[in-house]
Length: 131
Image 1 (cartoon, rainbow, N blue to C red):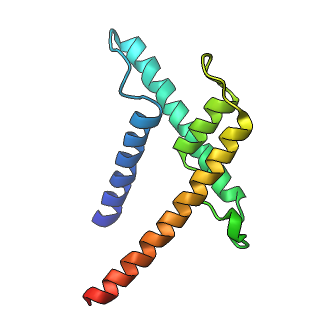
Image 2: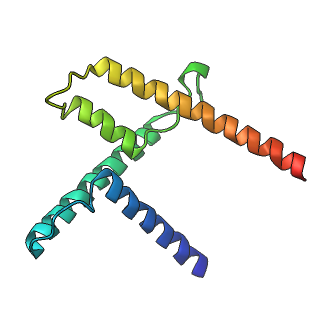
Image 3: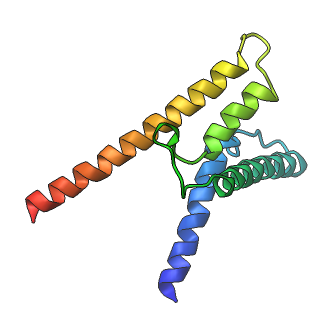
């Protein structure tokens, strides 16, 4: 019972930190209750949309048949935010090429997968050497 409560609290804390980082939950100015309430609500909604979008992308991907050159880490809310900024809300003073953004995202996710795999292998080697 206590362990499940701690696990739930941990998830809430991680979501709170994610909302602060991704949706800028902690950057609103507090001048009155209404403005703070609106800012917090919009930040939480933005973070929820990013988290649900990333979850939907993870469920849509089929990890049963990964091809060697297409193995990538799942889309994170931060990656989804970067892609949405490129395609939906382009920056006015910067020329962003959508194909470049997609290639960069694919390269970065493949690289992260490779790095995580190497990290796991290294931990297995050091665990055997220590034991």
